[in-house]
Length: 313
Length: 246
Image (cartoon, rainbow over the protein chains, first blue to last red):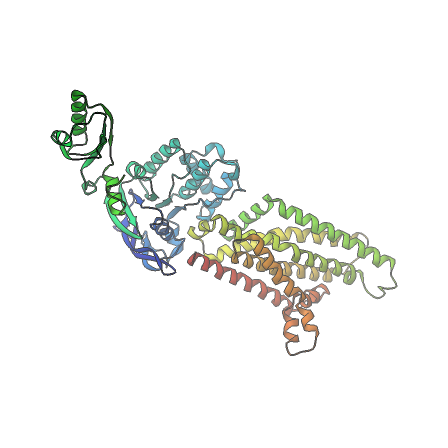
C-alpha cells in the first residue's frame, strides 16, 4: 500500500443501464477518519454509486482505487478492505446470527480464533450480544438491520460503505447507530447514503449531494459555503400588524406574508432576531402562536442543488 | 475459501426439511426396489440362469437410484443461486474478496457433500447383500463410481440452471428438462441415421450403463467429467454476467 495516498480514490466513474445514465462522471477522494454522507432524492444514483464502490457492480467507465489497489484489476486485494451494507441487508434467514456472521468473517479471509474474536467485537459494537443464537428469520427488522451492519464491520475494513443504514431502526436505535458511526469513523473511512438530512448533520464530516447521477455538491458539513441563504423562521400571529412593522424589527432582512397572519421571515442572526420578534409580538399583543425555524443551511443547500422548489415548503 | 462456502451451503441444506424428505423418499424406494429384485432373483432362478446377483440386483438397484436422484436433485440445486438472486445475498459474495470460480466450486462442493450422504446410504444398502452372498466387489465399486459421477454431473447442471433464473421452481424445471433429455437421448440414437452415433454418445444412459456393468472406460468417465466441468464453467460465466448487468 502506498502511503500519502487517499484510501479511496474515485476517478470519473459512470454507469449506464441500457442507455440511461445512473451515475455520470463521479470523482472524489476519501481518507480514513472521514465520514461522508451521500444525500439525494430517490433514484438520484446513490445506491448505484455505492454498489460500484463496493465492487458489486463494475462501472461502465472510470476507475476506483482502494488502498492503492484497482478495484477491477486487483479485486481480491481491494475488496478485502471494504465492508458493504446494501440497501437490502444480505441475510440468510435460516441461519443464526453467529453462524451468519462467522460465515461473513470467513468470506473475508478470517479463520479460527481470528474469526471468533471478530464475531465478538462486531456483535459488541452493534448490540447483538444477546441474540447470537437466534435465527435471523425470527429477529425484528431493527435487529436484522443491525446484523447487516455487523456484517459490514466484522473484518474491520478500512472503508465501510453503508446504504441507508438507518432503514427500519427505531429512534433509539438510530441514536445508537449515530454513536456507532462516529466511533467507528475515527479510524475507518465511512460512506453512508441517506435521505434524512438530520442523519448527515449528526454523523458526517462531509456531505455530497447527488442529483440525476451527478455530484452537485461536495462540502465539509461545517463549511461556511453551506450557509448559502439567510436563516428563516415561520411566524404565525392572531392579530398581525402590517408587514412593514415586522420589517422594522432589527435583524429582520425580509418578510413575506400570506395575508392570514402567517409570515416567513429571513433573519440576520438565528438566535437574536427570533428572540426580538417574539418579544415584540408579546409586547404589542399580536397573539403569537407559532414561531418555528424554517430550514437550516444543509436543507437549503439540498433543495437548491436538487432543484426542488427552493421557495416551497 | 471454497470450503467455507461449501460448508455454508451444506449447513443451509440440512437446515431445510426438503433434503430430508426427498432422501427419505428416495431411500424408501431404493430399498423397495432392492427387495423386490432380490425376491424375483431368488424365486425365478431359471429365468436369471447364468447371471450373477451383481449384474442383476445390484446394477438394477443402482440404475434406479440414479434415475431417482436425477428426478429429485433439481429440487435441491434449484435454491443454490436462484434464492441468492431473489434475496439479494449475491452481493455478499460479489463484494467479498472471493473469485467467481471459488463461489462456483464452493457451491458445487456443498451440494455434492449432501448428495454424497445419500450415496453413502445407497452403498450401505448394496453392501448389506454381503450378509447373504458374495457380490462382485469390483463391479459394485464401478457401479458406485458411476453413480457418483452421475451425481456430479446432475449437481453441476442443476447449479448452472439455478444461476439462470431468480425463480427456484423455474430453475428446477429447467434442470429437470435438461437431465431428462440427456437421460432419454439414446432412444434417438437407437434408430439408424447420420446423427445416431452423436445422440448415443451424448446420452447419459450408455455411459452410466457401462459403469454399472463393471466396465471402467476412460471415455465414460471423461463424459461425466466434461458434463460436470462444462456446466460449472457455464455457471461461472453466468454469475459473472449477473454481476455485470443487474
